Length: 562
Image (cartoon, rainbow, N blue to C red; front, side):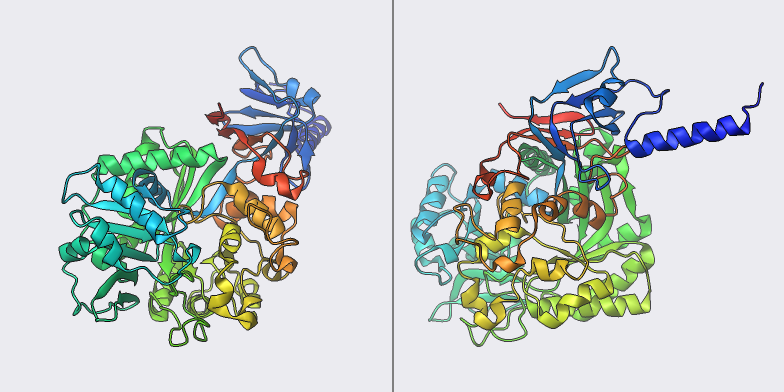
């Protein structure tokens, strides 16, 4: 066999390297499976940010550039997709959602958007008429901050309207629930029932339970509700994934699931039916955590559809239910500083063990005290087990003391934030925090200026699934009606480039996936979304009118608008 001269060999190596850097295919490459042309394509690849075409082979991007280059990979079986000038972006990823929670929300009474307690009761009563007496009626989405009377509701009106069915209704943020009398009887709740650590039972003037259970107290009621069967749970998970794809999501960082849902993910993955990029966080359960540590981190299972390498912990509750832990009392509840759901010692212990096992930790923290406790726990864990690239996260990071903002960059902690929370909460959060602390709420720009990244999300089903709600909020600090004019604390806005990265490459980085996901770059998975307008150039007030025309995972269409 002849030996290639060294000069020729070197020239060929250089040519191949140049082809890769320029986005061109090597001459010997096989035909593409899919070629996309005639589009404005935002790659989120800084070396080639906007192109007109790309090609896909074997589920990954094979070429990015101009139409001539893409068409050079056309073969007899290549699918051609001429988009007629439409906009393409990389697949959007929700960096903090709840897949099984969304599946459940799709199956139960939807209480979101109700403008009064009477409306809540009417929806529940209508559902109760469709089931037999004694059957549980559950729902999610009530928010007393939307009502004229913003105090917590009591069970009295609900019990009067639905006396024969146990009812349990979860608050929109998932940090409080409301039960009627029959449900409390089923759970054995009386005036003598004590508050659990990290939880609070609200009471009426006569000392009896009001029906509202906050944070860790929710478990008292939830244990009484019949569990769905495994098949019901699997169906809910599948339905939830389909719902996310309808809105242009190609992946979700599932923020805390039990072993049952993790097993369903693996079952779907083995069958080739997952069709999404699921970065599953393990809920804070000692048995599940021990099992995961023994097994070790699991990445890109089942053709790059499932990652199980992170643990979800909780520092505090939520602002809407006054469970977020604050350094100073709530302005509208002077005797209350919120709830610490976990001790700092527990957070530190799990984080330390996770570092030794090669796992990431993601701590829910909303109030300034909750965030400080989480940061302190991380700092101590990292002092005990120094790891350079741990990518520990704080989920939400909504209210930060100014002294703690630089600590994220110093410790290498990623703030995983949801821009849609700002546009939902801005009407009432000032009453919780007061003027002096309001400047520390949802501080995206302050954090970005320290050099860190912010993966974006929705916290669905707390907020709506549509990721463009968070994109719009990130660049405008406004709600869907473009209120307030000029934006709420507009000095904290993101640029459109940052907002797009916050839904693509930054979630990928936050999940150790940046070499496979997050941009349309040769070699990465071909996950992308086709939009009917250009969100990077459209007027801000038009962004939320954008429709997802199709969603693609690994070069295969998983959703198409009708």
